[in-house]
Length: 560
Image 1 (cartoon, rainbow, N blue to C red):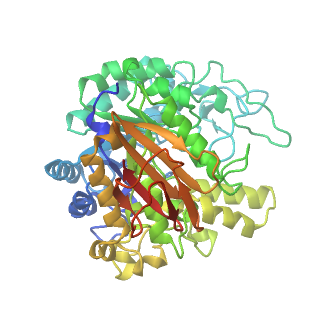
Image 2: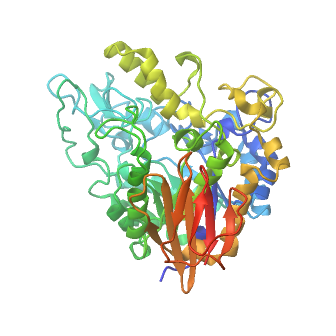
């Protein structure tokens, strides 16, 4: 039997602070801006805020390059502001989880500044340094943002490893002193009263000894070395040590971002008896609209059967002992209503359908800022308007090195670029959507006059109020949190349907992932004549005993 925990029953809301709400008119969201909107979050009904990094940073990767783990970035405010925000959240019974970014730091962190001074510096071993090989890099790994994963440093005639930007050198988790520094820093924040951590690419922290070359690819100088650093040899040991030294001493929630994790590994990371993490963010379902074997920019349409197989597999594998995170959106993903819904005619309906499908599954649901408003992807006029390092590096590489057609590349960016999620939250229909009185750091989506929080709050039929209802239902019906999951109609290409079961209670969830009408038949398995309709995104009339017609993008949840 699954044990009850507050974090299983919670709904989490992610704030990307730079784009949330600007209180002082400098065009950048800030902590005071978050405080101004806490009543909005309280009205939505969320239990936990996951706050993307607000630590001191040169902002090479928007705060995921941290130069001081114990201080707040000036742009966002002060430690005093942060303390007030935490107190105001707790006053409203909203918990706070912070981002823990410890696979890498900024190259401006004092540890790295010291580390690069000399080979015998006490901090040298806090990072991963290697001499070159045959006049080139120590191995052929490619960095996530393009180019080599190694940067030459002429001061000591060696290279340092950076799996991301060259301003994000990887920390050396083999060094026990470094690990202790991380644990002390975690305690620093937990002792201030935070309620847990979301851990950035945490399954990258253990690298295979010797850092071997990745498998060569015809015509490519650098290749993925992921099999040597994803879910590496000591990862479980490190996480169990972290749990023993830090996490077990506090009542907190933890979620590890883990690219390339399988359901079997997910179960190891999240099984309660192993004492590692509460849940993981996996990306299997996020890669389903990518051509097989290619990176995310090589697009293909989603086949709904793939999505059902993937999510269904995670549901069943983590059914007993493990726990799932449920998400469609975050700061690294495009807007879901543009991606797998219909952001034109059926924007409101399809956004509600996608929310229903996700929130009724077993696991802890995450809402990304603006998702509850049905915010959409952005199409900037030129590459110059984009800010994201991953997008800009990819564009430059494909145009300059491969001579590809810029228009084709822009189509990939419109579909998958990270800046789709990073345009400012649309609060009202005044200039810049009420996000700032100044010039926003990134342009606001021009559809803000139609899509904004003020309008959504005033309309009882809005996406916002639908999310409120989903969150309320979760609090009222234990089956939504703890019921087991069973997929229906596995091979249907447009209907995503499943049941949840707890004791003698059953929920039937039926969602239509298309603009077509469909006939749904329970095949006499369920009698719907006395079923209670818990939520739907259309007005629903009388239901026959076992079948009904589904409208475009329709969602229904019955309690049987």
